[in-house]
Length: 114
Length: 115
Image (tube, rainbow over all chains, first blue to last red):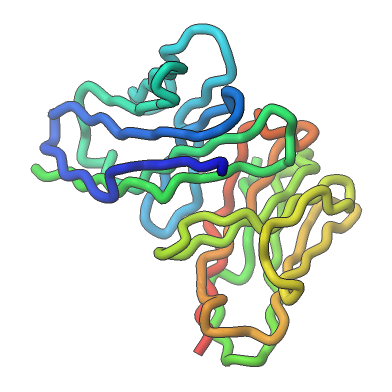
C-alpha cells in the first residue's frame, strides 16, 4: 500500500542548533515530493518540492531537503533553527500519474527552546 | 493578491445538523481541493474540483459533498453531522491544471466542532 511516514511525532531543538526531519514513502515509482509547514492556527505553506534532477533541493526560510532513491526518503534539514521555526511540518507526495491529490505524512511538531 | 479565503473560521454544530463551508481560491486559480485535518488521522484528501468538475474524491462517506462554481469558488457540505466530523477543514488552490506537481496554496481552514 502507498504510504508516507514521518517517524518522529515531536522534536525539540535548541535555537541555533541544526534540525533534520525524516520522511519515508512507499510508492511504486518516485512520486513528486513536498514539504509543507503549518504554524498554529494557519494553513499549510510550501517549503520546497522535488520532481527530478538534483537530489538536494533548496527551499524557503533556509530549509533544504535531500532525496535518496535507495532509501525512499526525502529528509528536511535546516542548519540553524530560529524560534520562528516552531511549527508542524508535513511531508507530502503526489503520484506522477496524477490523481489530483496529495498524500500527507502524519506530521512532525517542532519545538524550539531558547 | 488575496490568498485563499475560507469562511467561516469557526463553526459549532450539533449532531444531525448539516453544514456548508466556503472557499474562495486565489484569483486565477481554477483547481480547488479540500482536506480534512484531525489529530488522529492527520490530513485526509476529501475532493478536488477543476472547472466545476469533481475529478477525484477521497474515501469519505456520501454525507460529504462539494461543488465548484463558475468563478472557481467552492463549497463543501456535510450532512447529518457526527461527532467524528469535528476537524479543521482546509481548502487549497493551485494555478495550473491541478496536477499533483503543482504548488498548493492553503487557506487557514474552518474549524468545525460537532457537539
